[in-house]
Length: 88
Image (cartoon, rainbow, N blue to C red; front, side, top):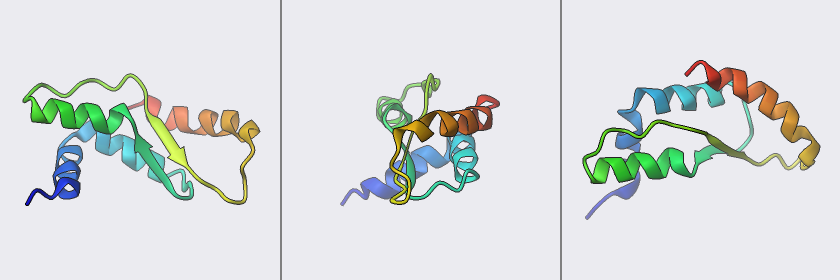
């Protein structure tokens, strides 16, 4: 049986840039966060089709903070996240 979670983890773990992104976002100590969308999809697609890893043109960071649900904090978080990942 295929273990899609383990297989996905292996694909991501072998990409140094994606791992750097995960480490950078982890350092922000956001509650209940993950990186989604093309970050994962492109890595899996490229792996399945034996293609070189697609460059990241953006990173979708998703998080949930039950104590802070205001969209106004989005710009504050972007100003923190962008420097953390811009060097990657």
